[in-house]
Length: 89
Image 1 (cartoon, rainbow, N blue to C red):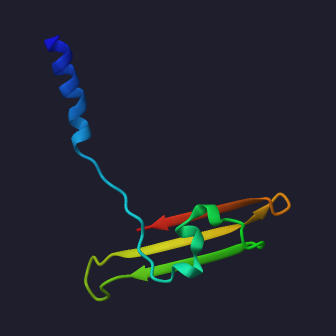
Image 2: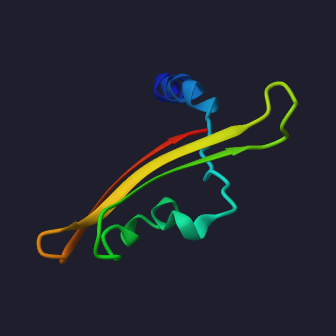
């Protein structure tokens, strides 16, 4: 039993270092709805390609910048939507 407890503790130690994700921050979300809701893909009835760039604290070294490129549109006679999004934060 002690070996099992020791093994469990040692196995869990690498999990102590975790990184969390967060959603990128954009102010003009109405121009790129797929970034906030992937289910929106294909709902407009035409293919859309867009890119968004946001740089915060301009002039400060190491300031955060967020880049997004996305495409989405309908497939299968407008009954299914397909989208592809790439983020760099």
